[in-house]
Every structure is written in structure tokens, then in C-alpha cells.
Length: 537
Ligand SMILES: CC(=O)SCCNC(=O)CCNC(=O)[C@H](O)C(C)(C)COP(=O)(O)OP(=O)(O)OC[C@H]1O[C@@H](n2cnc3c(N)ncnc32)[C@H](O)[C@@H]1OP(=O)(O)O
Ligand SMILES: CC(=O)C(=O)O
Image (tube, rainbow, N blue to C red; front, side, top):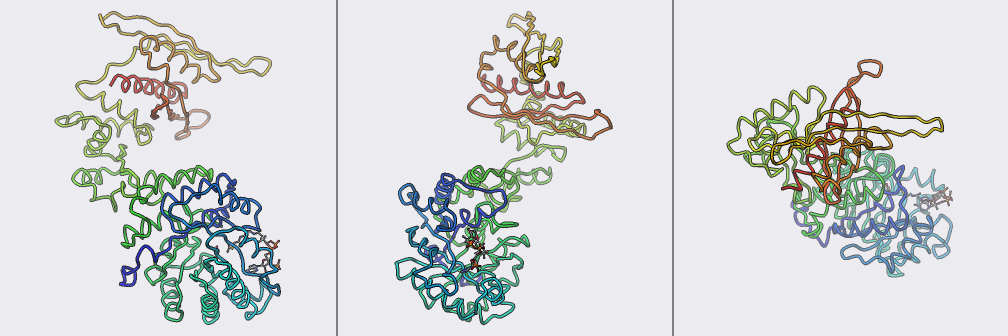
């Protein structure tokens, strides 16, 4: 890392988040005003310095957002930023309605987008390079004159610099002379690589006097790397979006930027107490954007510190740092050990520790679990997403293995399609419960449901709830089916995953069989057994 980088202090370094403006440009994302307020609060929790809220005057929703933000948003760390373009060509700045709307947003900061590529000036703006400079100067002067801090996003800066480096520098110098605080070099088409970004930033730094920033789109998959290269070369303002949401392939991911800047480059760009908020905020914003969180997202993904290979686990047993680039707790994440066909003894021992099961002196049992998992996974079972089934399998190999809840005599399900289009399912289960005096009680129970599995679940729960009253609070939360290896026709192996909840916690169980009802039965029995086991403990 260069001396320049280490010299940067938190206060002189900006992390600028544009989820609510550029992030909202992602296909499929449409934040309501209430969503935008919630996202802003979440971004404030991670300590970013600036939150770009949208383009007032262009989108009615954004105009309303800024109006409501004045009374409803109390930010602890961030300053709110309104985004907009420089005045139109040939229009007086004070007569430009969109520039006026930027003032009406009443934010302390305005981020203006300006053309910095001569070809764009001539072909997209259809004006002259000199008029574009006047548009920059007038708009910055006007907003600064009205007490706003102004940042200037120089659109297509890198492509423009390749074509005509002097013009890009003139745009920056014009903005700085008019009072802009930061000139942001934008890789708008996202086609740059880190080496090129580093070279251009270093060159521009040598030719300009003001503070430089970076805004990278992710079209080469290098947005974060490009941003870090720019920091290394001397920018002091970095723009990103939550989870990398943005136009086309997206933007630099704010969470990866913060994670890298703080933990790899030694720049305390957010308050220390905010760093462990990264994972929570990432997932909460994904919810608001209605996008499933990316499990493999660096730093914050659920799998970012999940270890599957047995060799990794054996080293982690000695010291977690041996296979983690960072202590996951630093960014609010957790390490997880996955027990699969790739597991070894160490994987099972670590998983046992994670589940609170003492395995000291249980070498044989651990070995049996490793062998059993390998055999079962070869038949289509998968325990990496079904911790509760794995726990039952593990406990089943220990000397104090919990007894089964019941012995199955039989179960039967039916599906009836009535002539009027109504489809009803019914299930009957016959089970034997063991009494404390060693005698057995035979219970027969029938349940109805909207499908055979639902009916079976109701019948089994009803058969057991007298003996295990805790099952009254337990319900099925999710049900997933995956067909494995079609063998032709409808003959295939079915894997069922069931998520169950008791209103406090949630656990996942698995069942595999060529018959979907039997696969579901295995997962259901594990789900209820796990509930009873944990309530008892
Ligand atoms: C790189 C980026 O992502 S920048 C952010 C882009 N975000 C968006 O475009 C989302 C919001 N946009 C909108 O709601 C609309 O496009 C508006 C309201 C801004 C403009 O709508 P319209 O007036 O119908 O114009 P339209 O979208 O067709 O074209 C954009 C106009 O802005 C002009 N323009 C583009 N960039 C700039 C600039 N930096 N400074 C001044 N004017 C600009 C164009 O020349 C064009 O002008 P024209 O209408 O005289 O041809
Ligand atoms: C400003 C912006 O979003 C860009 O140039 O990509």
C-alpha cells in the first residue's frame, strides 16, 4: 500500500453510497418511498459518509423521498445527497427546472453528473465542448452559491480520457474552480481493468489540484478491484451500492468496498462499531429490494465463511485463521462447517462443536458419521442445508442417543379430486408410543390437508401431541423438492427439505426417496423429533 493511502484519515475519506439512485437503476428493482427511507436508515447504520437519495425533479418518487426525509430521516453518520445533471445547454442555470429541484430537495450535498468525454458532448448533448464547460461552471457556482457542497460525477471519464485526456482535466479544473469539492472519475460503461484505472488516476492526480473520487460499474466484473486500484492511486472518495445493485451488471459493492478498505487497506473509513453491521444491513436491503441475498457474496454472504472440504476443516480445528481471510465476526458474519461427502473427521468434530455436542473420546462414532454421510450423499441425501437432520444422525451414533419418538406401524395417504374441481387429501398414521413402564400404546390418527404431505403432517402431529405437547406450537415454514437424476418417465429420486418453526427458531430437515411422500415423511419425522429433543433439553 502506498504512503498516500495510509496517510488518508477517516474524515478526509468519503464512502458514498448510491443504492437509492444508481442501485435503483438495476433491472427489476423498484423501491417505494417507504423502502427508500428504510434503505437510507440501514445505510446510515454502516457508517457511510454520504447517501445519494435519488434525482429530485426527474422522478416524482425521489422528490417525495427528499420531502419526507426532511422530517422522517434522522441520520447519525451520513449526509443526504441529491443527484442531478448540469444545466441544459443554452439554458440559464437559474431557469433550469431540474437544477431548481436540486435546491428544493434541501440536502446539504448535491452530486451533479456532467459529460467529460468530447464525443458525448457533441453527440449526446449536441453542444460544444466550451458550452459543456460553461454548464459545469454555472451549475456548480449556482449550487455552491446557495450553500450546497457539490460533488461532480464525470460521466465516461476513462473512455473520454483515452480519446482526449486534456478535455477530462479541463472539466475537473472547471468544476474545482467553481467550488466543487470532489471530481468523481466515472467508469460509466464499466469496461476498465484495475491496471488502467490506476494509471489514469495517477496521471490525473499529477495534472489536477482537487480531491478525486471513483465510481465504477461492474461490466468487467472488476468494479471493486477498479475502485481499490483508484484508492491506491490516490482517490479519496469511493462510490458504491449495496450488494453491487446497479445499471446492467451493477456497481462496486459497498460492503466489499468497506470490508476491503478497512480490513485490507487499513483505512478506517467507517466508525469501528459499524463494521459488524455489514451482514445484517446487506441482507435487510436485499429484502427491501426483493432480491434473494447472494449467499456467495464476499464478506457478507451466508457462505462467505462456510467450509466444506475436509482438509480445510482439519486445519481450522487447529486455528480458524488458517482457512479464513478474516475473522467473520468483524463484519457480522459467522463461520460454518458443512458436513457433506467431502467431510472428514475434523469436519464432524467442528460441526459437533458448532451444535454444542461434546465429541471428546467419541472417535469411533465420529468415524461412523463420516462414513454414513458419504454413503447417504452418494444416494442423494444432502446435509449441508439440513443441520437438524445432521444433528439427529450424529446423536444417533452416540452412547446417549435419544430414543425414537414412536415406532411406525403404517401410514396411508390419499388424494381425491371431486367432480367440482376440489382436491382434498387425507392421511392416516398408525404408530406405537413407548410408555415409561415399557408397555406400548397404539395410536391411530387421521388428518386432512391441501396435499398428501400436509395431511400426513397433520395426522402425525395429532398422533404425537398428547405425548409431546410442545409439538402444538410447531409448524411447517417451507417445503422444497428437488428431483435428482431422472431415470426416465416419472421414476427419479426426490429430495425434500422442510423448514420447521416453533415461533422462536427455525430448523431444516431432509428426506430422500424415489417416492415423494416417503421422502417427505423422513423429513417430517426428523422435524418433529428435533423439536421434541430441543424442547426437552
Ligand atoms: C450514468 C448515469 O447513470 S446518470 C443517471 C441516469 N439516470 C436517469 O436517467 C434516470 C432519471 N432520468 C429521467 O427521469 C429522465 O431521463 C430525465 C427526467 C432526466 C430527462 O428526461 P427528458 O427530458 O425526457 O430527456 P431524455 O431522457 O430523453 O434525455 C436526456 C436529456 O438530458 C440531457 N443531458 C444528458 N446528460 C446531461 C448532462 N450531464 N447535463 C445536462 N444535460 C444532460 C440530454 O442531452 C437530453 O437532452 P434533450 O432532452 O435536450 O435531448
Ligand atoms: C454517474 C454514473 O452513475 C456513471 O457515470 O456511471
